[in-house]
Length: 219
Image (cartoon, rainbow, N blue to C red):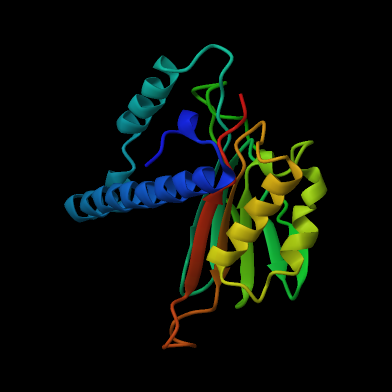
């Protein structure tokens, strides 16, 4: 894999991003494997939610962050059988919903960004998906000044026929094209399609997902 500082063409950048995404996917799969192990070792849900461990994780993050640094986050969980969506928003952009060819924002109450108040609590918010719905989770770099001309929401409405993997590629390339090949902030998009429960469509998986980062922020 070519190092970012050695990239001379956008082809090299995209190749590096694709390879990094594959590596991240493998790491995430391993991370979720540990979560499965925790559920196996501590079968009661309340036991897995270890308050002491959560405080330790927050303390570790705070120890490595500068005073002016913070992180936004959007945590979600989909019940693949019912389409029930649970979300927690820590100062992040609201997800976009594509339903019947129309794009709208899922209205969420945004809590504080992470790293500002260690004792902050965040409320769980619920939303019901319909079969055929598409979720788009994006970072603000997809809408920053240099990328705004890509008109992501309008473009997203026209891509319903594409697989999520192709959709994220179209969206990130559109942002890179209008931003001159470099963005000032992290520009990442995650697409999730919910097809309905596997019981209603036994030959098809309940969801399709894909994620891609347009590029590392320009320095």
